[in-house]
Length: 128
Image (cartoon, rainbow, N blue to C red; front, top):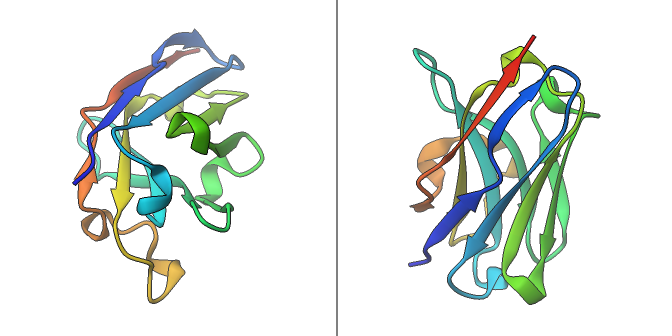
């Protein structure tokens, strides 16, 4: 099991930027897949971005492509979510998640039940 701690959330105006960090208690390479999800009040948890930690391949939901970038720093056991051109609809609690097995089909990366370990979340609020 891995402990995940998110940080970097806050309140920004539309068009602004934030960088979220997810610090893992162990070596990130032990978890083949890590992802960022978000959940707004009254909405389902949504997969935002993911990274295969061994190959550094990245995946994004359509609504953040071109604006968000997921990256990893293996030396720091940390995964980042760089968020640019933020919009009010990006307002949500953002969660880091880790999967301890490779996906049989990577197209399933947005399925929250495929991740075993979760952080407590960090709030992102974007005002218009």
